Image 1 (tube, rainbow, N blue to C red):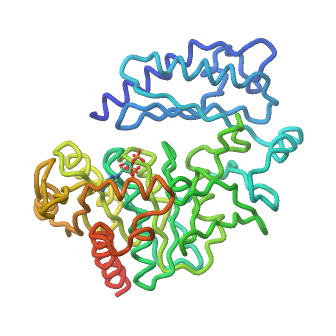
Image 2 (cartoon, protein in one colour; image 1 turned 45 degrees about the vertical axis):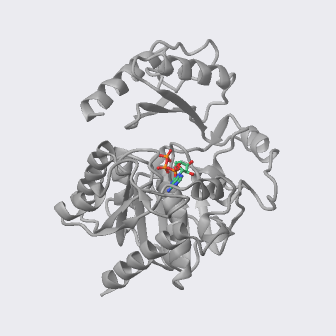
Amino acid sequence: MTSPDKESLKQAVKDALATITVPDGEVKKAGSPAQDIVGAGLVSAVIVDDEARAGIVLDFGTSAPGDVEALRTAAENAARNVNGITQANVVLTAAKTETAAKTASARPRPNQTGPAPTLKRTPPPPPSPKEIPGIRHIIAVASGKGGVGKSTTSINLALGLKEQGLKTGILDLDIFGPSLPMLLGLDARPNAEDKKIIPHVAHGLTAMSIGFLLDVDQPVVWRGPRVMGATQQLIHEVAWGELDVLVIDMPPGTGDVQLTLVQQAPLSGAVIVSTPQDLALIDARKGLAMFRKVGTPVFGFIENMSYLNCPSCGHEIHVFGHGGAEAAAQELNTPFLGRVPLHMRIRESADAGNPIMVSDPDCPEAAAYRSIARKVAHSLETAEG
Ligand SMILES: Nc1ncnc2c1ncn2[C@@H]1O[C@H](COP(=O)(O)OP(=O)(O)OP(=O)(O)O)[C@@H](O)[C@H]1O
């Protein structure tokens, strides 16, 4: 999808939202005469991604919302009915009131012991990335489009880096569909201490996901994100401790959200995941352009779902064509980090919360991730000079 398409879809979603009336006696931002939810200032963000999925944030400020679920449903239906929109997801946010705080804290997640950390509104992002004390390197795992295996690659790459002796963390910033809770088989809300969120530790990785803070049962994300605010918080207000490397699983695509994320984290470098199909490669090129624009070194391309190993003779079968990412990498003067086969083991282990680097470390697919992780570790060393 070209950006003008995305822009016009975004406008169409906004127009559709503007047909929803603020119910009588319901929330309305102070000083606003408008009666529709856009005019009343309740729509704080509309995002349309490369797959034409709409993400909408309805922000209730400090008003105590009444039937916010009805508004959510109305907004979702309005966005879904826009021609071209494939999916719509509405996040509700509000500043914490005493009652709200009580309601929220009355619903602890399993394993929760301390007060629940909440996503909160934070000041606009700083113009230049702030160093994070204790973290030597941050790398972003990006993809031009969704569904290419970016999250699966992120977790196995992180485990591969840990195997190299690096103290490794992983941060899932995929606001469109956080996968880390599933990949690690974890959904407990993290605790907070001294105003910092305490990350989980799983398979030897320090792990944090935006998904740990978004409560599926809770209609409102209290003091919840403007996406950028949440991102800031997840990068800078988590007690990461000492890490050699933090792997960030980025949201798919190369739009404004991604660009801002890239600018918020002091990245040592990025890797771009692609599949062999042409379309994915075109998108991957956009990813490269985005990182180059902000001066982040791209450590290289990874080709995922690259081939099948024939179950009887072990030969590689190239279902989606062959060598596209490698050729593109060469043409774009960017390293090629390696290919990962398409294999049920990768999918099943990921779905079971036991990534293949842990569940079957001696299989050929784990070897593919290991080889990529070695190259990335080498790039990090080189980056250190
Ligand atoms: N090499 C592989 N072989 C088999 N299945 C894979 C492979 N890589 C990823 N998958 C599967 O493909 C699906 C999409 O992968 P994943 O969620 O990692 O993609 P993504 O790019 O992060 O997607 P999204 O954009 O939706 O976040 C998952 O079910 C995953 O298990």
